[in-house]
Length: 193
Image 1 (cartoon, rainbow, N blue to C red):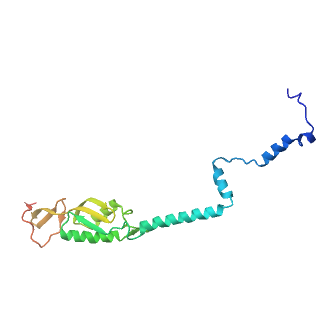
Image 2 (cartoon, helix red, strand yellow):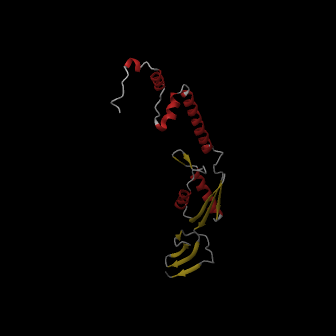
Image 3 (tube, rainbow, N blue to C red):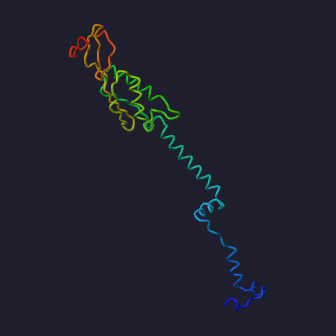
């Protein structure tokens, strides 16, 4: 079948109108390069530099806008701190310690910002710096500007009297420093230990 096919001379073959139309179509052919064709066309277009700078400007604008919202001192910053469950003296002491903690920064991130405040770190800090706190039951963020800390103070639970003196024992079993103040008469007293 192929052997009997008559070959055209090259002069006739390349001068035919059918060959010329195929050649014209082949000259405009563009190979599809898969999924990258959109991006390749984007950068090959005449306005690619305008589009690139426009996208870069919009991207930087969005980053700046969100950075402003996160770090601007009047938005999502803790303004009010409430301490629940503590006596007045301990509450004032905790307020001062909380203010010092919130004024600190970790790298460039302020602790006073509601989004960046790590509650377990705050609980650990309060337990470490204040011996008058037995437990931190709960720390709640109250949007948009408040923080509530619920603590259980370390209170005297009973007294122990020995030949060396009288000791106050707290509700968690630790001995409290002796004070010259009169102890509460409602406390249980253990003698002779």
